[in-house]
Each structure stands twice: as structure tokens, then as C-alpha cells.
Image (cartoon, rainbow, N blue to C red; front, top):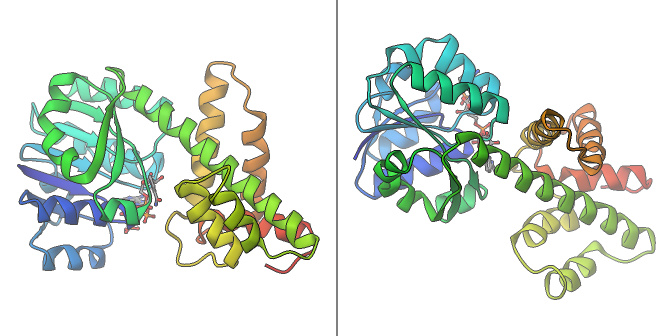
Length: 292
Ligand code: NAP
């Protein structure tokens, strides 16, 4: 396929490389041009404007947040100029409210819209093993399925309403944040009693909770090593806030999310926003008077 790719951060770069390796023609655009160099080395065409990336068979975007997507897509006039019939696949984690607004705006401009947020960190993206939560018209998803097949291990088709994919992603990230928080608190507990957090990690990942969450984020907490960040705390806070807002919109209280939100605010207040999401472990350790 002939595709455009907008947003070459930690996730977007890994995904665009996989699309190239699978033989797709990829035009890439990123606000900071230096990040396009590695992609150019792999055969991507680097373009100067988002409009040039928004053409061909489909355009994929993996921007940071609502603000970034709105500024490029809506305020920058990208959607207005998009060729009719193009499919735009937004893979970033954005609010349910913006997803609803974008679905309507795409319709007005004759552009097909698929929401396809993903589960998996940059290493998972690099391995082509993402879980893709896709929502939109089946025919539109069919058109981009060949690209999804190289980006992910599984595409979960979760309905026709784009925002449903975003709500599912927010629900999943709320659970992820809660798991990191609980490991951080539990690690502080065992440390407070003179045991290494590594012992907790070994026991828990080989008994009650095997799987990537405790094995990955738990290991960072046990090692008190929060860099390099695979998923920045600042972006994790964004997602927890979006989950709370999505709950507010339909009168669903998420009391646990509020606790985790405050702990992430604590991390940012201590200058740790660019560190990994696992830095919630440092917040728990600091609260317990421990070095971390
Ligand atoms: P990232 O490394 O911080 O990259 C963010 C991207 O957004 C960069 O390309 C950045 O451009 C661009 N951007 C930010 N503000 C912009 C603006 N105002 N105008 C234009 N471009 C702007 O983030 P990431 O980790 O790749 O995450 C991308 C998305 O995937 C987020 O929605 C995140 O929640 C989601 N996600 C992340 C993970 C993860 O583990 N990292 C996992 C699943 C989903 P510059 O290079 O110019 O700054």
C-alpha cells in the first residue's frame, strides 16, 4: 500500500519501520525533522508537510495527545485539504470526546475515519506484536487491515463507533496504571520490612500475576530504574485523566483512577514526567521515606 505516517515518536517510529519492512511505501512527517532521519535510512520518503503525508491509500497518525492531533488535523486545516475517500487511521490514545468530534468532522470532509489505539509499548511495537483496538466501518478497516497485520499480532474489531475503541483503550490503561500503582505500594511495603523488591517481583510474576505488566513495569520498580522511558509518566497521566473524563461524561465514578492521577501529579511535581510510567514506584517509595 501507499501510506502516510504522521508522528514519529517512540511508538510511531517503530510502527512506520515495520510498515516499510513489509514492503509498503511510506511517506513520513514529524514536527521535529531530526526524528525522520532513521526512517529515511530505512527507505521512507520524508515529506515537508502533514498534507503530503495525508494522501495515497491511507494515512496513519500516532501523535502524543488531543492537543497535538487537534493542532495538526483540525487547526492546521489538514482535514479540509485531505483527498476525498482517504482513510485516516488514528492510533494515538485520545479522549472519547475528541474521537466523537473527529468522527463527525471526517464525515463532513468525506474522509473515512478509523480509531485504532494500541496496547503495547515501543518494544512490542518494534516486534510487530501490538494489540490493535479498531473501530469504524468494517469496509474502512478492511482497507487498512494489511498494515494492521504487520503492526500487530491481533486486530480486535470492537465496533462501528470510533470512540468505543478509545474508551476501551482508556479502560485498559486505567487498569495498567492501577497495577503499576499497586506494585509500587507493595514494593514499598516489602522494602519497609527489609526485603528486596526483587523477591516480590520473582514470587508474584511466577505465581499470581504472570504477564507483561508486572514483569516489565514491576522490574523497573524493583530496579528503581525509570529511564530510558518506554512510556512517559506524563503520557500515562494524560490517559488516567482521559479515563476520569470519559467516566464523568456518563456518570461513572472511578475513585481508584483519582488516586493514581494524584500520584502521577506528584511524580510530575518532582520533575519525573519524562521518566517511565513505572515511576509511580518512586512516588510510593518516597511517601514511605525510602530512597528510590
Ligand atoms: P512520544 O514519543 O512523546 O511522541 C509523540 C509524537 O507526537 C512525536 O512525534 C511528537 O513530535 C508529536 N507531537 C507532540 N505534540 C505535537 C504537536 N503539538 N504538533 C505536532 N506533533 C506533536 O509519544 P509515544 O510514546 O510515541 O506515544 C504516542 C501515542 O501513543 C500517545 O497517544 C500515547 O499515549 C500512545 N501510546 C504510547 C505507548 C507507549 O508505551 N509509549 C503505548 C501505547 C500507546 P516531536 O517529535 O516533534 O516532539
